[in-house]
Length: 311
Image (cartoon, rainbow, N blue to C red; front, side, top):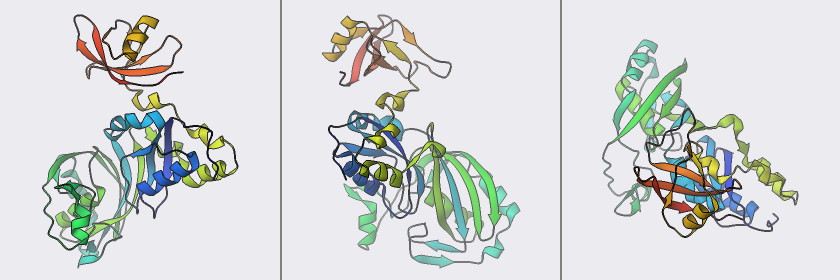
């Protein structure tokens, strides 16, 4: 694949294919972009497909804001078997008769999983304990203890029940394991279950319909042009939910030197607030410059939190 003339910065909304890891996607984009500074927001398991947000260059410094966004999934929960990984890639550890599960029973069960719940992550996960990922301990046959933690299921929408498969649309907080949700639905029904298929349909405001396939990116890069870069979105799109402020030249210099700056002309849209005390700052020419955090509301003082290179 061709190496680009220089590093680029921006965000790619990639439709991850099944059968590869999120890290594999990052490695392939590093290769086509010809640069090392690439990262992703929100891991998808190899079985899963759908929205994977990949950041390049300066946009990697904004991954934390993408990871914190609400997620949406189309999930297929298969009743009748449980696996040690809670998905279709694992070994079967329990079986039951899905004929013992009824639609009315499942609809009642789903209601109990909406809202804030306590969820125990799968033992085969990248969560770390004592500095080591849980899946490494599990694969080595070592005992793995995982504590439940609070997650929020904002919505569980019934799509189809074609025994043994229940198809759901899930809207949830970051950190929610849909594999664990499938496992727990099985336990609540009395019939073992696992996650048979999963597609992330949205991550924050980033939708599956807007995503580009990894194959298309690689084909366009292989043509020897920069055509693939047309799919790149500006780094500041990752924080478009934050209010905007345009600084004067003096303010730009202060921010570039890490100094506090007075801000009075905050432009907040109808869905934007300054309650989180963060704004995105721009130069008079409209270039994205920094994220500022509020120091003193009375004096309208703001401190640079992250400063980005401009031309």
